[in-house]
Amino acid sequence: MATDYYSLLGVNKSASQDEIKKAFRKLAHEHHPDKASGNVDKFKEINEAYQVLGNEDKRRQYDRFGSASTGSSGYPGGGFNYQDFNRGNGNPFGQGFNQGGVHFDFGDLSEMGDLGDIFGSFFGGGFGQKSTNPKSQRGEDLEIEITVEFEEGVFGVEKTIDLQKKVLCDACGGNGAEPGTKITDCPTCHGSGRVKKVQQTFLGNIQTEAVCPECHGEGKKYDKKCQQCHGAGIMSGSEKIKVAIPAGISDKQTIKLSGKGEVSAKGSAGDLYIRIRVKSSRDLVRDGDNIMSQYHIKISQAVLGDKVMVETVDGPVSLKIPEGTQSHTKFSLKSRGVPHLQGRGRGDHIVEVIVDIPKNIGRGQQELLKKLGI
Image: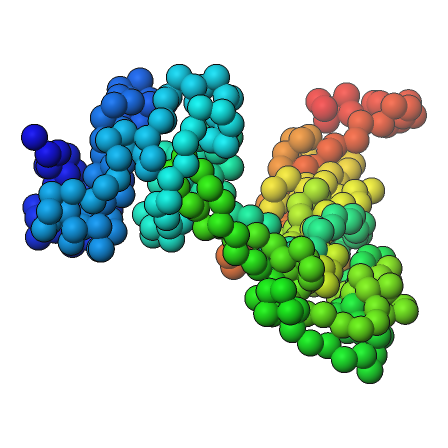
């Protein structure tokens, strides 16, 4: 009895091509021989069904005569053996395979998303992967370090750096051709940068695309290479770059400047990553968005109270010392700290008061302290 391909794929005879592809994709994932639940025979059957129903001409022939002459094995021409395939280390072009004349279009796979994962092992993991196109190659990312003063990290600053890197050739503008040289479309790929190939596999004739070997993906051909860059389109040079370091940036934080890395003549530039080193201050210490400092006072100031001028990033600020202040008491100067990098406002300046105890005092001072009971 003839095989019912529609039943194998679980679709109706009126199913659209999209429905057939979707059904095949689901079943191929389920029965792939590499999976624990895989079934080699079932996998071959559903592939045979898709080779017929997925082709309009063969589908019409099948609907009319019940056959599309695909061969009984499910792989055109027959002769496929999964054990032989394994012994060939996944090489579909090794011994034990007979090729037929069926065209298996990669376009179907690209429309079906990750179907390349189903057949990936058949091609040594390379099936379904994107090939590298020199036209889309990106320049290298760069990383540098800039040191700023403590106050510059607090309030922000603009720095200008002279960056040594690969830049576009100023003679040819990056196209690699000597100025005045005629530039034409590559005759091999007709300007597309890619060429199509047809390979015979156990699935039939497979059409693939590859980078044009003549122009290496550029799509252009010129009579003479640029003498300054020798056809590379890029050369060593420098660029002055202004960097806006935001207020509130912390030590070891990184700023990213998109497109300011090294240039690729055939594509976009990489990115520049700037690592910020914030110098420490002699008197001030940063704690998050707060600034910490210490202020030393005399015993008399601690006992009687006083007003003192405390140094902050904004300059001297008055601080009231209440009567009876104990050593290591902390006072907060609101909004005198570091600006919040994400959001508005500033942190506080926390002043720790240290009461200095004199080491050597005279006899009269000693007697006075005794009388005071201090």
